[in-house]
Length: 476
Ligand code: 6PG
Image (cartoon, helix red, strand yellow):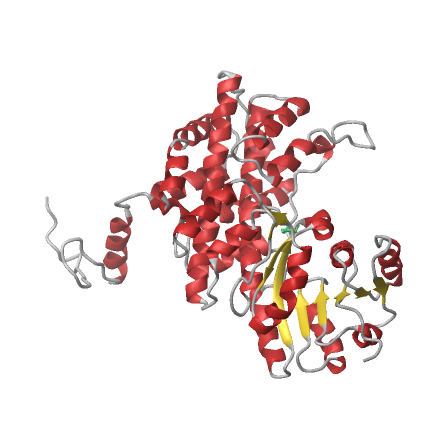
């Protein structure tokens, strides 16, 4: 115990783990890390800010020995079986009251199982979303811990110190019971997928439809990022168009193969939304578009067969760019609306008590989907923390109402030009359905009852009804 003087331990010293641990040390805490790869331990020590206390441990046992009880040990290792393997290695070394944090993108059901497994052993387990990439990890991420309230009490000062700050407020808060931390991070990533898809579609219209070059593309996205939808994703998009390729000297964006990868969090969001059920069609579409992108060979064969041509969009460039801005703004709000509505429903269904006003507040800084829009959403949830859909907030409704016309025009022009705008279309389709007093689903109910006697409800009286459609008098 005499030697136990370290405040925070990290297992897994890849870029994220190393940077997060260095961030802890930069805030005056003694930080210790372990990785099976000794070169990563050396890199941790050599990258520490002079004057800070950072140590690489030679073994897990050494790290545990040197941590102050109750020990706070975070894992940043690949999601899946590796997390369980690390937990099993840790268990014999820990004491009741110690805290394990899983900071990776684990599936929330795995987190739930781990919480239950460790509860019996009196070890606290916190599933925690961390967003912000490598840079954010070092300078201030958005942090989404959930689960054990006692662990949160212990971790709060450390996490508040290392989190991003907006108006001096740390971008970390307790996200709710059980696996709420990982659930909120999963939905964050679903929204991330959807917004990235929308940005890529506006890029496609500007590049193939309007034939802007990379400098012009940079200028458009840079200008948008200086306005009302300022965001991290727009900022990096603007920068991407200026990046030179070291190999050919061309712009790097043009040299990157059009096959998107994914690690699964977007797909999980869609899968879980269907289970709840709640509609997140723009997230679904973003996942689907990444999937289609990966079938490059088939796309080449189909292109040769159908020979699609892109029609150049000849409308006034200034006007089109303004419409595109408004269309992207509108559709981006829809992505947040879908994700937040999902969290609202999941919070109730899975009994997680997710504080939505804190979710949007901590997404204002540090994370990948940070945007000035989050300030507006924070105000909306402050007014009503049970808001089931942000589109029901009067101020937000006012903001998007003005812009829906632009989205309709962009979809018309994009599809006329032969440019796929499936993400934008899905956002508009969601909006149009969500705002419909009457949907055509009466016909679906009639069909279900016709072929399967599934019954239907009526518009004029309570109850459940079935019609013997075949025998019924048909009006001739
Ligand atoms: C973040 C990111 C981060 C990671 C995603 C990328 O919030 O910092 O979301 O978690 O970049 O896992 O996911 P895909 O590889 O699935 O695009």
